[in-house]
Image (cartoon, rainbow, N blue to C red; front, side):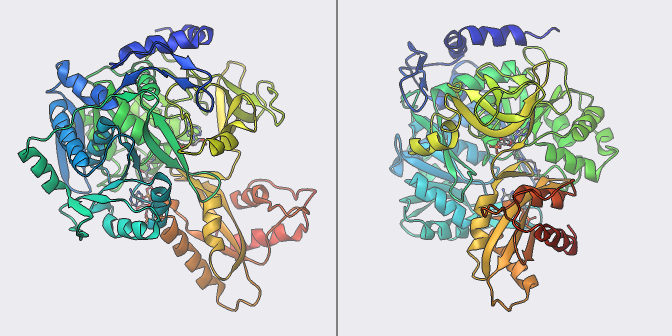
Length: 633
Ligand code: COA
Ligand code: AMP
């Protein structure tokens, strides 16, 4: 099939408002949009400023009303809990409307924030949808974060309630959420009024009288009383959720998503980008704590009337490297979406893909990869073992959906390994130099997007228009700064090569080295420090910390290094995967005092490096190399 991409993209370029007005017809509005875009509203304009809607209606009730009640909405599969379950759209409606009534009984209403701190279980989706139903703004916090990170988010979002479970399950250990939550609430200045706690069979958590409510009991009472909440009417521009993501400091950015634009964009992608029909099974093997989970475990597949999959397991070790293939066969999955690191993990365990021979994967049409750069080796390996197209696509928490991809539904363009292909309608992507001038094809530059961003992308940061402006809009006036660098080739294909800030990508998880530096600097023996991301064959990158000790510190550096590793785990969480701390005598700096992180990274990665002309003392670079060698890096 020849691709309709160029025609569709040109159509969007010619008249963006007409394009999004047409896409908006697929949504059930309480008040359909008259005005498509208001350039004067918000930080850079707002989509569908006069429309009204409810996301939960479109993701749940609408499908029941249209005859999909008996179709599976959610398939839950947990090798870690040894549990499986299915929820039809009718059952989902019952769960979500009852839970929404429970939230109302707890005093939660339109505009109130609710933190969802939960593992990969269907109740996490019920929680998000219940908030959407009554206009509460959810903020899901990933389970791998420590209490302090949770506290920071509680203080920024000031939630009325927190929804949690007694535990998450990681291979070989239970993650007890409740003590982490209790600690976070005691650290936070903003105290939520109530906590709704789901007791899982693996761990029974203690409850605080007056504040904590038992999930099962509250649901039962609501059912006994015949309580169900109906969908409230919201402005398309009202916030649906806040999702915190790493910024360049320890304070995460609260990315805001709206109700209307978000629905329009995500619904458009299901058919046109992912090539999925309502009723098919779509599996995003991520976590609801990340943007991929928000958009493609929860909202997009449900808005589309597809079946989504909640998998509480890993690509390897639960029980083996055939886990993904078992899932595809068992649930007749049409498209799988995951991070390249998951495939690197499978390849490492089972390089000849022996496990795949045990399964029938004929339902699978496409594999989508995102979250980090898809290295050509991994893409080629996945193509070979699966025999289906492997589509890399690039996006960010901020955009909420794909910026550059290969639109399977419009007809695939030829794949070029190492490139996520071409900009999606909505995105005018340009490569510029420091003065914001376009650079020629083939030349690296900063990747920017001409404003306005499309529907679905962040309108602002939570209660912080100023940080939104400073972080994304100030440096290149008229453009959104992606903070990624890359180039475009002569066919218009984009190549995304890495970040221009101090964000690193570890196993598809976005982390701030600045945040880790703040933690290392808080150690009483540390005078100064630097954290860089270094190459890792499995996770893409891993953090590596350098610390200069205060003069007069006589303690064994090896002990201090161990303390630094535990400090990052305690303060940020296991997800930081911070395992290497090296004490050094000095850090390499320019004469103006800037730490030469880029050169240190080249040394650690074994890449060619030369001492920059501005370096204060070149001998320090040799010291760094020797310290890394002594550490076995
Ligand atoms: N709750 C608590 N802890 C968690 C967690 C969660 N939800 N998720 C991960 N962790 C912990 C892990 O147990 C691990 O702890 P450890 O140091 O005690 O071993 C640590 O955080 C680091 O996790 P991770 O970097 O994911 O490494 P891993 O060794 O557990 O797994 C992969 C490696 C490649 C299998 C895994 O990262 C993976 O499946 N990635 C898929 C990509 C993905 O989901 N990306 C999200 C965006 S699309
Ligand atoms: P997150 O906000 O967690 O989704 O991380 C976004 C960042 O991950 C981007 O800014 C990129 O640096 C990186 N990233 C995500 N997807 C890709 C991809 N397909 N190719 C290259 N980098 C990617």
